[in-house]
Image 1: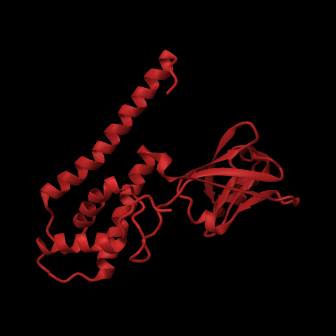
Image 2: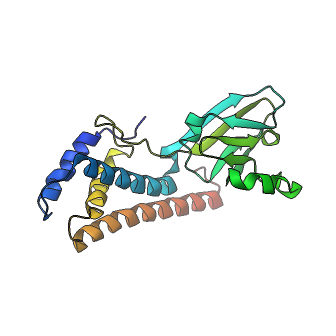
Image 3: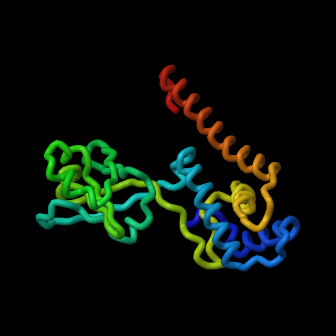
Length: 216
């Protein structure tokens, strides 16, 4: 489910209205505006995954009672995984498992030194991890997902509504048909930097509570 309520059509109409005021070319194709909005959503989502990871945290579970060495995560789930690592429930503890490309798997797995340090293989459609890192018959994984693509006009923005303005401004910023606007650049950078400052303050507060013995 998307994090926002504003649809792609509403975003595109907002973006088109703003661009008409500053662009030397007055005609913008829907496909162009859709593309710029998708790029902008991806940029803002990448920042939010760093500063507010809980927004894009997702889970999956499954089972395999065969003698296969690996669990295979469904392709529909694998397509959503964005993070560089999965957290795997190993019974009593969570283990962060690095994702490695399938082309590297054979060489690394042949070296026994690596078998305890990675358990996930990524390919174009599959994600696997070593059963030794989890319960032999079932798994539960936690990961950071990609934002939902705005594939139709009715699809909502997968960024909280409070960041809608940032998405619109970033889309304007990357539009190749308008000259760079220093004020727009400053506004976008200021909003992005503000997100990082908020996260740093949150981390410092949590660290202070940990030292004092308070529960965060």
